[in-house]
Image (cartoon, rainbow, N blue to C red; front, side, top):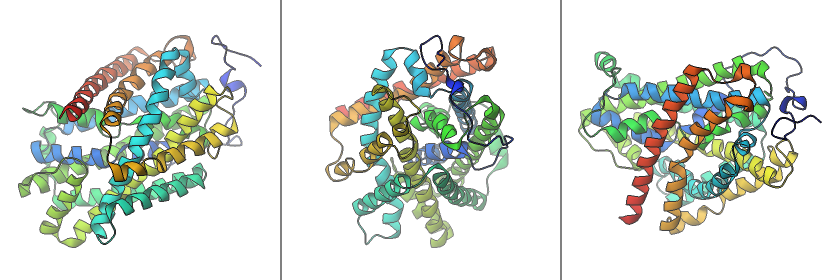
Length: 432
C-alpha cells in the first residue's frame, strides 16, 4: 500500500467514485443543499429579521458578503476532500495534535448543548400552533423524530427529506417577502457597504453567522456519502455549493425584506432569541390574517427541523471519523460511516442526554465552555483550510491561488472578529 509524505495511505489509491462510471452531472438536490439548509436555523432567522427591522436594507451588502464567505469556506472543504481523498479530520491531524485536542472536546460539549437548543427551537412553532401540548413535550418529540429519521435511513433518503424541508421553508419565506412588497430603490442603496451607528454586531452576524456552523465542515463527508470521491466531481461540487448558497442568500434576503417592510413598519421590537420569530407571527396575524401567520410558523418549523436532521447526520459523521481515527480504524471503516456504531453513538448523544437540559436549564459552566469553543470553531475552520489548501498537503493543481488565499484570509479575519465578539457575549452572560 502506498503512503504519502505524512505516512498516511494514499487517498485515491483505494477510494473510487460510487457512480459506476457515470458522467458527472449537477442536480439541484445534492450535498450543497443539505449543508446550506442545515446551517440556517432559527437564530439566523432572528438575526436577519432584527437587522431588517432596525436598519432596513442598510445591511443588504453584508448578506451578500456572507453568502460569498460561505461559498469560499465550503468549496475549500469540498475541494480538499475531492483532491486528496481524505476527510477533513484526516487533514486536520496533519497540522498537528492541537487540532485533535481542540476538536475532540468541542464536538462533545457542542453536541450536548446544541441538542437541547435545536429541539427547543423546533418545538417553538409547534407549541404556538398546538398550545395544548407543552413546549418541552414538543421538543422531545422533535428530538425523537430527528433520531428516527437519521438512525434508520441512508444518505439518499436523508437528502430527499432535507430537500422537502428546504422547499417548504424557501417557498414560505420568499412568499412572505413578495407579499411585503420590497422597496427596490432602498435595496439598491443597501448594496453600498456601510455600518450603521450601533450596527457592528448585526453586520458581523449577517456576514459571518448566517448559515455558518460546524456543518460547513461536514460537506466533505456528505460528498463521500453521495459517492463523490475524486477530482472528477470538482466542477459539479463547485456548482452544487454555489447554487445552494445562492438559494440561502435569497432566503436570508427574504427575511431581511420581512424585517424591513413588516416589522419596522409595525414599529414593534423583536425579542432576542428564537422567541423573536413568534413576535413576527403576531405581527403577520395583525397585518395579513391568521393564515399568513400560520404559514410562517410552518416555514419556521421546516427551517429548524432541517437543522436537526442535518446536524444529527453530518456532525455524527464527523464524530465517527474523529473517534474512528482515535481508535486506529481509519476513515473508511464501516464503524465510521452512516449506520456505523460510532455514528450511532453520537446520534444517541445528540438526542437523549440533552433532554436533561430541557428540564434543568443550562449550567453556567457548560454555557461558558460551549460559548468559548463555539465562538472559535469558524476561525479554526478558516485558518486550517489555509493550511490544508497550500503546500504539499494537496496536489498542486488543486491548491489555492493567490486570490483564493486572500479571500480565505479575509474570511478567517472576519470570523476571528465575530468569534471574539461571541466569546465576549458568552462571558457577559455568565457574569451577568
